[in-house]
Length: 426
Ligand code: HAM
Figure: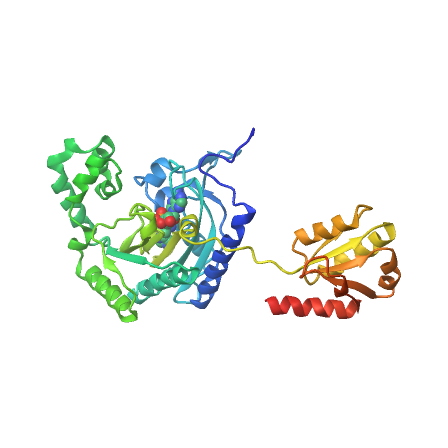
């Protein structure tokens, strides 16, 4: 073939669509029950939206953004994630006006120029939710439960929820100082990137994938050990809230998220089949983000999940389909009636026309191959009746041979039969 889908992207082929649609239905249904409304933001944004929020020193901004200049010289970036765009829209449209908490969700493609590997794509899909307006730890609990409920209803068993706190502006300086202190004597053992990170943003050393840096990172003091009183109380309240509902979780002191906007709560959900590197999804609090983007200071928390990763641990369902009606004709007159009926039957269910002057047995066989349950016959003898509104209908469910299953039905009765059939098969 001359053309292939670009590296790191993939077509979602017809036999995979049923699984995507089923997951999307589950997402929308649970989001609705938890009180979240859908928001759809553009696929590209001003580049600085992401550099300011996700962070200059993050891997996403440093290496992974699809950034381009448009014809007027503006720098734009295909969205690598959904939180910054949603908070941008929240601020731009004053979505919080008149309410304490704004609950939004999204489903759609994201773009990161990563090295393609298992579970990692350049165009991938996320669903996510953002609860903006409250610093109450009860909202953190609710967001985590929203995420676990979606995964449960999607059919995923064996979830593991990892929880951590990354502190806030009050306690972070002490943590950063402790990292610098711990690593300064080992500076030469860090990769060149991490030597720079040590100056600019030591927290990002925890994201480094170079093995020697990972080893050093294990000795780095954890944020949760440096929390101020307010952050500690918040973290304890989230733990208590999850425990009260009985959702299992574990504290993972080494859990860091590769994005700069996080404060306090950080969490990820993993699944045994995917390995530690590939989370099904993650999220956390971002109490400084709205202000960073020029809005009124507004706390928020959310999560996003990778849909490819979720689907990779689920079975593929068969495509649910409406019952099929075949219409068979043999000449121009039959063809004309067939076209009218096709258009009418398709108000209720699936229908296909098998016309032309070909072999009749072949037509029945083709109809059978499409899984047709009923056939409307419009050969020579049947056309006159059909014009008067009386159809010749044959039941194909027992195969095409059983001649006796042919019977006359008024067009209106037939339509009612079809509606009943569709309803029964729900
Ligand atoms: P994130 O951890 O960067 O967080 O991405 C969330 C999820 O998206 C990951 O756990 C993974 O399942 C999926 N994902 C990320 N990159 C890829 C990729 N290259 N290929 C396939 N799947 C991928 C965020 O995006 C935050 N916006 C989450 C959030 C919402 N925090 C607060 N609110």
